[in-house]
Length: 483
Length: 104
Image (cartoon, rainbow over all chains, first blue to last red; front, side, top):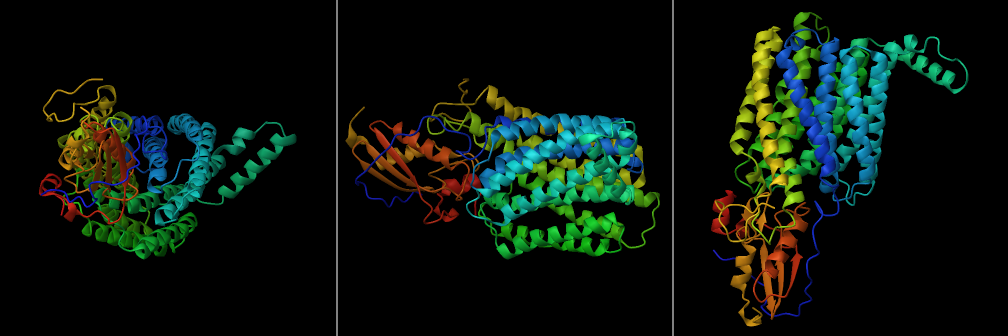
């Protein structure tokens, strides 16, 4: 079938020559080095975290209020998830919302604060030195402040406000509250010992008084409840909010579809905010209202799933690739996670060893199930995208260049998917039974998935060193020109 | 070669088959993205669309199309115009395009 060409063959033309060179993602997104730096940091943290569970499976077999679990959780949350999410946001928010990043320079500064802050925090959590956790946490918070300011100013420029912009704005609010709550908890644990004997005059005196007042306020709340409330702010407010909001833009883009009901999409984001606000207070106060607000959040996720299903049913692209499979599996895991949330919110639930293991499973499934599965799926879109733009965009039309899917091994991607899923099941069973051997077996499968991701990541990055550029008209089997 | 008369639509389409949408992995002709070609001597104007408005690849693909046009013997100037009306739909694809992409 020939293409139809309706324009007449002769017209008055005002042709132009192309500009020399292209900037990645047009004028909107930052240079690829910045998001790549965040992403490589994230992959390194994931590798360390996965290896840590293999070496020390007892971490997940015991109650989570101890130095190792808190350190490992922050390694995954800050090192792996936040690094990837923040790097991706610098790239995706300008693209998804058709605007320009406010300041790339601020983003580079944030990366430095983030790197030093999270490594120091994990290290000091491991040593259970809360004073130093507070110091490194302050560095991390400065970074988060720069991040929030930068993305907020970027949102300010958005030409057309939509549900994605609303969700990103809400996520910025919740991440700010998360770090404030985290720092407050750290302050409550160490400020009296740390400030003993310090000067009591001038500005320092005011600071110490302020910190002591804050510590006094935080100490009114149960320590474990405060930790759970803090975790929900980050897990639901930042990560889940972004998964929901950004996917309303990206899933239609990747599957060639569109949002089917703006009202449904808006309602899901609104209810997610309402559910989290209520849950935060209810968890903090150990209120029986916890269940009601959990149900509001679950309703929000059900509406999100409904809209996602409608988007996929209306898609023009037939088969879904593995990247989308990863993402949809993450969304499906909201199901068991919601069930656990209902059980753990049930009024009068007895606090025993099994309940503790259920709490471990809830946190594990949330972070390494839902959020990590979604992130890996999106990484298979974002990293090839970044490298392709950096390496090949200036050659398109002048040489034969690979498609995004040609830059990595789909077979490894599939192996990664199944080993990830099997690892999650294995670790979940091990956590429920409190069995270290089963946890180790599951974590080995999970690590296999991480290795598959790293190999594919290396394959994609290798295009930057050895571009696969061929003369026009050559077949795929031809030898590439090495630049 | 500078003979203007030798430039024709077939040459333009052949050149456009060298330009791919890297996300979908198919060339822009078989995807049905080319809406029109106008040839005037050594000047070519191409009207095309993309699969989705706001596509982050738009600038690269449009520029790639321009480079491909300038690579045709006899073409000295080329212009590529991105348009969104009518919106792209899989029914605009060729049989080859559907087979390659598995689109509905």
